[in-house]
Image 1 (tube, rainbow, N blue to C red):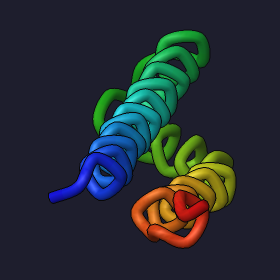
Image 2: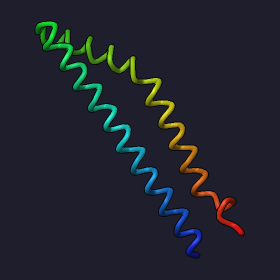
Image 3: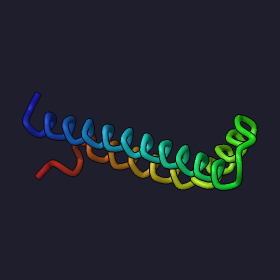
Length: 86
């Protein structure tokens, strides 16, 4: 493997890890928002929590999808050798 290929592979892997962290952070934020909504409005435990979680997921799902697509495009771009050639 050449240095150029190794660099492309390493950068692609780094972006995959960042993408995973981004998705995990989004999930945690949604869960916290649902819990906060549940406790601020009074507990009717499981059913209310599921409703609040579903509501928060619906709000952020399009944003996360756009971010994940952008990461995927960047990963593919980094892994391609086209931009590394002189």
